[in-house]
Every structure is written in structure tokens, then in C-alpha cells.
Image (cartoon, rainbow, N blue to C red):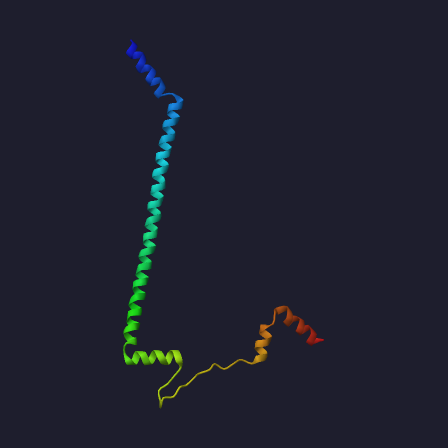
Length: 127
């Protein structure tokens, strides 16, 4: 009989409201921890994907730079680079500089004024 009472007392304590609340809180803490780990995993996967894309672009840039370096090691490549940067020519070569024709300065001045200024000038000139 005594043993049966002890078992019933133990069941009563285990299934009481406070013990169930404590178990619910512990379960909530574990679920929250698992969810946080899952979020970090998803964030890490996104970060890895972006790093892989960046690695690919850097590798492409590296191959371009290596080809530029290889062309600079040749006489023709070096000459081309110097001509582009410093606007020089060899003796006997001619340099042609093309310049865009400039628009009339009055048209530019009219366009550069604010709209209300143009309206005011139009009213004044009409009087």
C-alpha cells in the first residue's frame, strides 16, 4: 500500500501544472536553439554562394590581368600602352586628334539657366 501511495504521489508531482510548465519551457528553449542553428546554417549557405561568385569574378579578373601583363612583356604591347597613356608617337608617325564640334555657346547658356529664369527672360523680352 505504501508503495502505491509513493507512486501516486510521484505521478501527481510529475503531472502537476508547475512541472508541466517547466518541461514546456525546457522544450521551448531547445526548439529555439535548434531554430537559431538552422537560421545560421541558411545564412552561411547564402554567404558561401556569394563568396563563390566573388571567387569566380576574381579568377576572371586574374586571367585578364595575366593576359595584360603578358602583352606588356612584348615590345608591341608596351608601345601600345605608352601611346594610349601618354599620347606620344614614334618619329615619322602622325597623330590625329579628333575633336567634337562645339555647340553654340548661346544655346548652352540658355539651356543652363533655370526654367523660371528662361520664362522670366521671355516675358521681359516680349515687353
